[in-house]
Length: 410
Ligand code: HGY
Ligand code: MN
Ligand code: MN
Image (cartoon, rainbow, N blue to C red; front, top):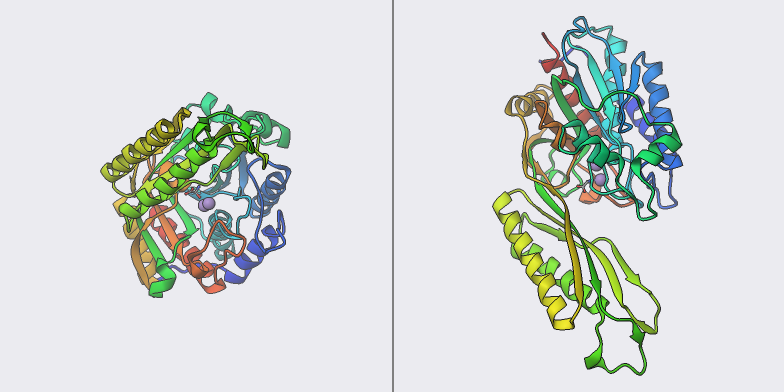
């Protein structure tokens, strides 16, 4: 039996398309890097919409935004939903913001139905989920969950040396509220960002786990020299070293297929001049696997590949593992609530492990948590062509609403 409260799919779609105008890119995506003026503009719109929906809005010291709809029992901790507003540099219209606006639609639908829940309902937007401008990813939900302290969170620097704390103050989102509070249950709606749901024709992904991640930063230092007179055998070419590691990282991912993922996504070459042998290269490594022991083996293999390249090419190495997020099992009762909501609404569904990290991964440490996935076109995300269908967008929001209501009863 589905709930008497029905989301308005057209309204949600319109809000997504309106929000997508902020930071819109020529290929149809968005660029809303964390704490830029574009992120501020999107935050301001979200706050306005929350207030128009009758929410009280709170911002905490990490800039996390909470729109609160009161219930009958203010003594009860809120049932919370939400995701992130920031995007990748060549991001899409749905990654993160879908979960934020689906949560807002839950509140709008409750208002339309005149339903008062026992527990308060909150929709959240978490600062710097992507980890693109500032590393690591999910840093603000990490502070909320007590994984990182506030000083660590505020001191994360971007490649220009600006800190999260400075940028929060600059855009007016350095809130006063302490970071962290009781949460009765947390549900995050998100596009799958992979190909499984679309390939199998499923409408809903019932997310049971999220895979573990390890992130590294590595600098190889060789010797700059003239590309002409310098004999090949005497060179200490930092870029050749990075190239060997990049290929090794890809092979390590393939060796632990089908679930492993291994990526070098950021590379800086110095002095980056076509006729000077690169003296220094900075690059990042992103390893993922749902099994922690396998992730540890991948860690061992990457470290060995880095050491081998450095030895063969006589390079100095500075390697730092900057982030480790272990595999996350979501709360069985919340997972069951998502599954039951999909069934009650007649949506096809399957259990699925999240390949991407999400704020739900950290909130799961302090509250019963689960996620709702919907398909995305071609399984493509972190790409301007990212797309989802209005029907799936609406279905995910309805499942989110019904799962949340099931946990909002005293
Ligand atoms: O990297 C991730 O999994 C997420 O998009 N931050
Ligand atoms: Mn995301
Ligand atoms: Mn993302």
